[in-house]
Image (cartoon, rainbow, N blue to C red; front, side):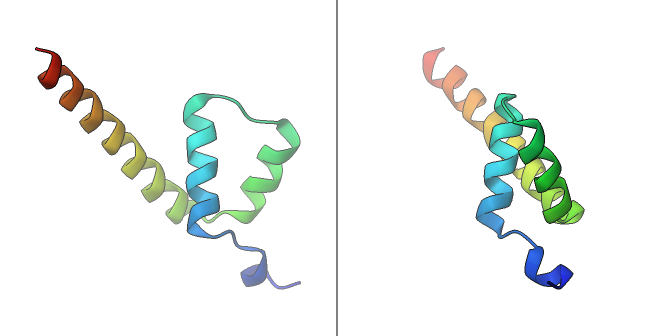
Length: 65
């Protein structure tokens, strides 16, 4: 199987980032995900997820205050 066929989709990358932010990962799945996902896609997805999380927290604080 070629390396291109083994790459994960953007939704799978988003799922990997979400589970990592929560802190719940199975060791064997983690190693499999490391093999599949591209570093650049993972980096941009993680930065986007963290940015959205921070913006959501700011919006919550602004709404409550």
